[in-house]
Amino acid sequence: MRNLNKSGQNLVSNTSNSFSTKHMLIIGDALEVLKDRDLLPKESINLIVTSPPYGLGKDYGDTFRDDFNLSKWTEMVEKVGVEAHTILKSNGSFFFNVSPIPDKKTSEIVPLDSYAYMALKKCGFQLRNKIMWRFHNMQNCTKRLSGRWEAILWFVKDLEKYVFNLDAIRVPYLTNDSRITGTGRNPTDVWFFHRINNMTKNKLGIDHPCVYPEDMIMRIVKMSSNPGDLILDPFVGSGTTMRVARMLNRNSIGIEINPKYEKLVRKRVEPEQTTLSSRCMFEVIRA
Ligand SMILES: C[S@@+](CC[C@H](N)C(=O)[O-])C[C@H]1O[C@@H](n2cnc3c(N)ncnc32)[C@H](O)[C@@H]1O
Image (cartoon, rainbow, N blue to C red; front, side):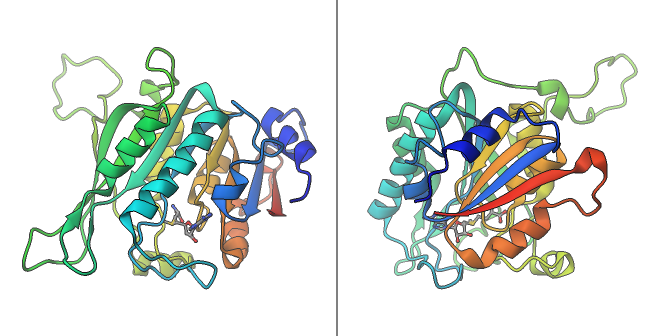
């Protein structure tokens, strides 16, 4: 692997004034890249947001097969967790989005979030909230209740000390009572965000099978990081986490195994219009 020390350090410290933010896409296997301490030094990342492959046989291109084997999947999550714990700052957070999935042979539901919880707990993480992400418009089932949520496990390293900007994510009150004087209510641990369906993807020109809703990642980034911070998504896919980081003046690193998404990520991260204040640096590294 190329020696990435300089570029990694630059991104981590973000001392240059010439770009408002810096973004590095690493094309490679997250399980290898996450171990590289030149690139990802110990305690260098403020926030990790990710959604790994669920093993549902999605078509992510030829680079790897999204096949499912529960023990291998759990092993993979634990390997990611060990490295994530090492590179995350002591007041950092790790958001791990995963869904219950039907077993391909028996159709029994496998609660992947429970397995992920056990695996990440072993790595030293502590659960702050299990967020239920609700949505409409998914497959309608006839032999069981239709699935309409995914889990977002919010882990911290230290329950006594972590970034939580509640005021940045308050939502309107449920009633118009004039006695209420605050600036909005806590959004709670049940969130509703529309999924990005194929129509939206086509409209936005995003050729990727599962894209995060931008507004959901915005809530996470606002609540658990500050401008200038460094955010990592080890399974970055179409680049939503990096795009949101750029929009909210944070720096980002994304790891993606499939080189075919490089163009898409670049298109989504680089600003539509290069004004001085929105100039960002986008770098691609092949691990
Ligand atoms: C669930 S998708 C993430 C989608 C992303 N949240 C977005 O908004 O586009 C998972 C991504 O992880 C990538 N991937 C799978 N295994 C990987 C690995 N070992 N290292 C890095 N990326 C991997 C897949 O190619 C896929 O793009």
